[in-house]
Amino acid sequence: MRNGCNNDVCADAMAIKGVLENMSDMSSFFAVYQPIIDYGQEKKIVGFEALARLKHKKHGTIYPAKFIPVISQMGKLNQLSYRIISEAIQFVVDYNHRNNTDVFVSLNISPNQISDSCFVKDITRIVGDVPSIKNKITIEITEEFESFMSNSFIQNIRKLRRSGFKVALDDFGSGFFSLISIVELTYDYLKIDKKTVARVSNNKDLKNILSSFVRYCNSNNITVISEGVETKEQIDTLMDLNINIYQGYYFSQPIRYVKALDYTCC
Image 1 (cartoon, one colour):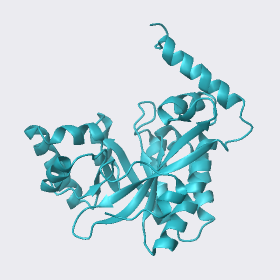
Image 2: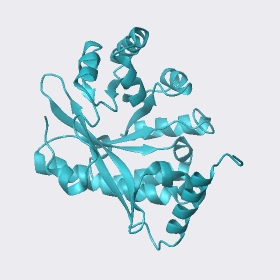
Image 3: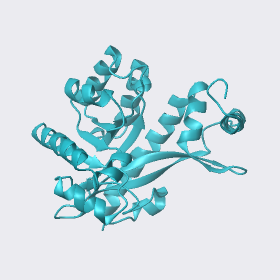
């Protein structure tokens, strides 16, 4: 293996790059929406996570793990994010109007993007076109070593929260910098990653660690969400830890716009 890439990975990257280079716009990208469920006493939908997909005639549906690295190298990640953000805004407006609810929609944004002051201004401008929508938009921060906890990242996160956006730390439990970040920054949501959720039922030490973090979050007004929930056993364990908000295939796979508008729980 040379240049950190095996033949299959490199071939996939080259194929996707070819697809992207031949696009005249971002119209082949679309969003799917995975429900986020409060499984406490009321059992209701509290939000959706918007996830990008790329549709291609030959390759079918292409997932972010394959196209995000390529589109980032091509300098088109912001362009894609603007498209998904615009669609997600319209989705949450339509969903709340149709179902007489007050749910939020979350979007994955990298720290490199958050560290870019122009990107933050653009998000604010796009969302600002829709009155009273900022508090329905949650920015999910994924970890990247290069810029996570940089000065510009910290400043722009604080700007976003001051302007009305919600902020979530995504995939908690998967990286070292999460611990530092929770102390240094104020988050609205903390999302436990699916690998941690998959292991917690059979790991007493992990249960104790999570229990401590849940208490910390509760005392600091941080809502805990468990991702990748797939079984009733996981739900029972999480409820014992006082975690009641879930996202995962136990409830629904990510679904297209029109179908998501009619999704109800539970």
